Image 1 (cartoon, rainbow, N blue to C red):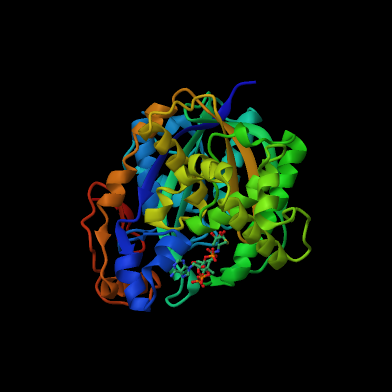
Image 2 (spheres, helix red, strand yellow):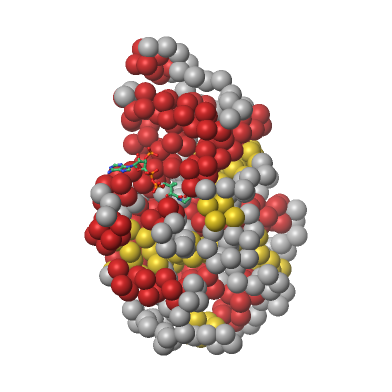
Length: 440
Ligand code: HMG
């Protein structure tokens, strides 16, 4: 069977930065460590006035096409995953294709386009759709572009405000991929939940504490379902485990949960039992709150074991390096986590070709998906080509007053002249309705 998977990726961050320790915490009267240690975040990426989900997605896609030497004829499908859409009819992929057609010879008239919605997991679902399209033999030798793009903004004063972010990841899904091959093994955990909603409103209504419990409960179901198809997974099976990362502190909890599924016969249970004076709780819970409590207890005990600390430091922590500086990118978040992990491998000179990753996606509402993927021989070249460090370093550092101004702008609360904090350089910009995506 021909391998199908992710051939290449490109990233585009919002051009502004909100520093949580220096700017956000003092304004809120909070200890900066609540954010840097508790949530695990240093800063958020924020969109400048001329940026939105279309411009960020189009900029990432343009970089992807240029780097891979692609023309519109090579692309048979463009899907956008977003939960920040502004149009309930016309998909964002058509706007992005329109931007790209300004700069390439040819057009995307024969490419299938759509928009996927299921909160943050929609990015992975779009990758799945592209995979299935190729596997079904409907691609006529062409590749798919999947764009995960979001402005993950919360109302000012909402508990989620510290976890904001904005950016896009564009992924090329092809036969014989250079980056990772996707496995046929997948597991799901899905239930009708109402902890995070955006019913025709600019910012989400969130029950933040409950959303943490739902994330863990659905992730547990997905792990169980994954094991029902992939068989028992073992601690040494995966070189990295990228999770959906609303903030790194969430992944610390989810990693402890995943660890429960991969520590059979390793001796760690005995070590834990000794640590907490009894066998750690492994039973299922009807109540998600009780379940979170059990995970927390388990996590506290796990942190005391050397085996867990080594596993977390090697397998999970490397997936969080970009998220710490950019916040939650919703649909793109788990795809950034994969990039972070492979970037760490590159920086530490570790050859991970042929190794497996356990990828854990999640979307509120709610659904978790676990799947496996195998790193391909071309991974080093693909990851070395990314300039995410430069993009992150080049962001304009907002003062609090500037942050409030640009937040109002994205909430359409001000009619004042558009203030731009950065100067767009050779990128698509949003200039108001009807003039979207002109290239400066
Ligand atoms: P909060 O009330 O601001 O924070 O909201 P907290 O009081 O719970 O503190 C956070 C952590 O910091 C805690 O750690 C504190 O102990 C610690 P934990 O106990 O949980 O391990 N802390 C400190 N640590 C060190 N020094 C200090 C200090 N003070 C406190 N001085 C909350 C947190 C998650 C509720 C909030 O950020 C929120 O509402 N976020 C938005 C919702 C969210 O991200 N949920 C995550 C799961 S749902 C999801 O991932 C889906 C999503 O991406 C959307 C989608 O799918 O579309 C959101």
